[in-house]
Image (cartoon, rainbow, N blue to C red; front, side, top):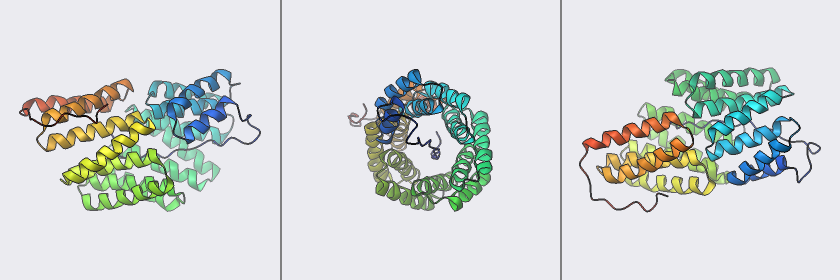
Length: 312
């Protein structure tokens, strides 16, 4: 999986767009509160009641994406793109289509849509939207192995960004490059800065993502006690917000931690939980990665470690 965070383009409904009790507004309100299961139910109702506007499709797609239902998310974002009436609506649909394809390991399509997102942002001359698109394109390039271009785009995005949440995402993503280059001291420094910002913003969803990345970076730096503590905190936070993808990622990283500590039985328990979630949400690349890790455990002797009570 990619430790990088994709930046989100948001559609803001005007005061005359819908009534307060409209399912689309209710869906967006649930998303803002990180009530992803409720948002998914409301999003389906919003699309059913929609007169073809993109807002309902976007809300359904975002709810499905956060809940880990990537197939539903993709269909919804395709609907949003199909019904888009303005360049702003098309740009936002490109953003989410790119993010969803990346989660499904479709790198070519992810790059295509984020390049479209970038062109639209530049056409609109929106500084913050351009920063978001640059960040997302950098994530795709990072996943494709082009680290030099990726970090250049991350730095370009950071120079344009004024939003604290997006600055924190950029810190996380720059850290992920340093971690890949085994410069763990710098990676941990950037991740801790990102974690502090999300803590101040009270963004528990993004906090959980960065905590999970920080825990895995501590693992790579062989700081195992710190890794276990923050990974379990990240896992609990993802379970609380209902973010299935990052719940599975925390399980995967805990499996790697216990593997590195010579505890294959404990590692396998976490890997199995992680694989089950990745399979459920159609994250094929991540599922294959965990299954490979499980297969590799066969060469390690069994251990007598504690039972896993945290895995649910």
